[in-house]
Image (cartoon, rainbow, N blue to C red; front, side, top):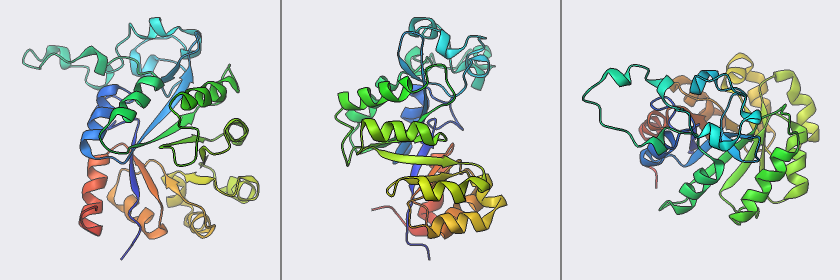
Length: 268
């Protein structure tokens, strides 16, 4: 019987049910009982960190604009939730939704929401690269974490990236912030295991673990904490439990929490 109960981290919020990276999706994840929230951050033209995955807005806001060339005021005029349920306007009986739950979400607003919540919730923040702003993204991120006093050991945040250089940058700026080296190619692991920091977490993708089980076993044996993305299926959760991973990042936090309760009993 597995003994490690992994933290359930809501990938871009409860993004299976609600539009990713919206405040509505994160509040749903919190209400569900997720232990952590995951977000991607990009820098706007006027220096704001916003929770957006893609470099452009075609998929999530029906707009051809590029996040890094737009100001926050321009982004605030867009609807980031309509794409998830394009027929909602035809439902005359649907309740009016608070527009704050549908618009662009700044990282500051997300962190304020977590800081004010009535239980500890952790936030996994991924910086996206390449970007026109390079290291400025990490610099602004660390400055914001300092505003919250979350640049110290024990803070409820960790910074993730596929970019080893980006994580080194964060480590120089704030050595106590927890770091997660994301990984999606099995041939990168032999090199990364030699160069990443002793206390860094490894974040492999579930597809890589499925396709290359020996790499997953090697990562598990490395003695490092392992956080796996994006775990949405029962058999993938079971694979993670077998490997003893410490966190599963999922679009479906409610499903993962229910499955964990079935396997391991109620959380304490």
